[in-house]
Amino acid sequence: MEQRNMIMAFVLSMLVLVSWQALFPTEPVTEPSMELAQQTLVTPATPSSSEAQSQQQAIVPDVSLSSRAAPVPVEAAGNQELAMLQNDVLILKLDAQGAIISATMPQYHQTIEPDSPQVSVLDIAAERPLYINSGLLGQALPIFTIDSQTQNAAEGVLRLKATLVDGNQWIRNISLQPGSYAIRVVDEISGNADYEMFRQLVARNPDRDMSNIYQYVGPISLFEDKLVENSYDDLDEKSPVKQKVRGGWTGVMEHYFIAAIVGDPERVYDYYFKGDGKTYQAGVLSAGDRNAHGTVFTTDIYIGPKATPILKQFGAGLERSVDYGWFAVIAKPLHQLLLWLHGYLGNYGLCIIVLVLMIKTLFYWPTQKAYESMADMRKLQPEMQRVRDLHGDDRQKMGQEMMALYKKNKVNPMGGCLPIVIQIPVFFALYKSLLVSIELRHAPFYGWITDLSAMDPYYVLPIVMGASMIIQQSLNPAPMDPMQAKVMKFLPVIFTFMFLFFPSGLVLYWLVNNILSIAQQWYILKVKNAL
Image (cartoon, rainbow, N blue to C red; front, side, top):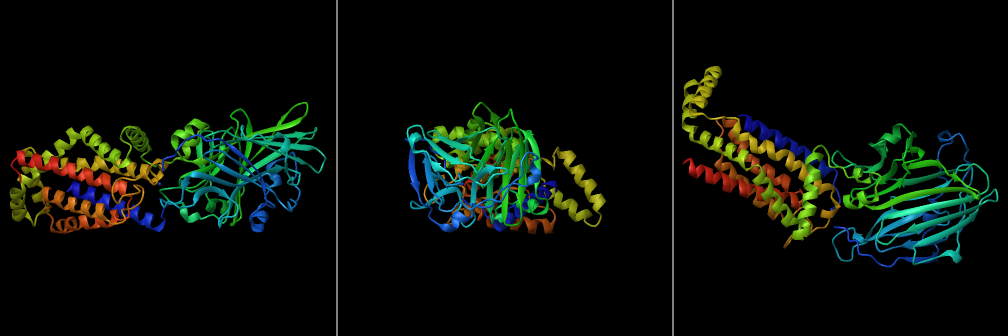
């Protein structure tokens, strides 16, 4: 029967999905808090590690990326100083070469444990360093000092100054507003020289196994309204990759966080990607604006969570970095609906339950027709078995007799597969929403379910879900083919095993859906005297 084929296809799809999840595990998914606190500007401190200092050296673009200047060897910075700029949601550390070597978010933690370390999107001292540096083509990286006369903690502005080898002065202003993940960097360089600046994200020894077919992790850009993913493996084969684009942005993203350099929509930039198997760069080259005093470069940077409302507020299409997959047309509204429901219910687990009720209500009529067809098929089981006994050796004759039996009793053998067809895209769409939505990261339900984006630690929900599948299966028409009947008996076991490793929020959705389906199907069978 078509219904069995659909279920088998669904099982195979789920086996592929759970296999990839087992091979490429993802970190668990918190709702960002935007409480404003006074910004603080901290005086310089010495580096915590000499190794971190050395990681910042000799990362410059290829000369072929620009015809206006040629790079020269980058000199070591020597004894670097660190400055810190922070607000209530972001803590930035900068080194003496002006690089952002650390970006920590105090409102996000690595696990749900109270003493869990805070999440650092950038960290040059980590096992897999990621940081943002910049410089001028044709010039060694400068040695900045803090212009102490212009520090202003209330405004959240850090002012650095440096002298270039040609004697020109470089002033860098870095500003950070309260409650914002947006950073504005304004570089002012004196003199009449034609300067070109590069600014780039540098990743060393990235964990490329974190990227899989369900969730991309790595260099990413938005060029001319098209999302471009230059994976680490791709860059190993075809580096460098260059593109001249108006506006756009480039960055490196993790599962739930992203660091991106955003271009002015009115300006044309030279974007580039490089990689040598160990170190990878996603950057941009640009010429500044000339004025009477010199050249000015203005850059916006986003370092923070991949939370759609926050990304939309920042602009530039950064929300496109949240990938909802093939069923985005369903997943996006589901995500928005979950956020809307959370505003009233305050618990994403309850939101998922209400979402199931809304979906069941929306598809009540087609589901009703499908279950009525299944009830009619259940009543025809004795007649179908009789036809099979009479014509079991003649498949063509048996098929003709079966079709005549369906027509006589006005039964649609295809009607029973409709609920499965409807639920598969919704299932995968909700799965993707749970996978990528940072709002669900570390979101608790009740009792032992402390993280709806993680698996049930005691396997209670998957086991109960498996039991509900057994009950639901007993209400369905029995397969006429003995082999199919044996396979169907194992389906609850297979599904239970797969759901052991699924996010508990997804298992909750499937369990509630099964319970409502059982209630609806049992009622129809009772009305039609098919129990």
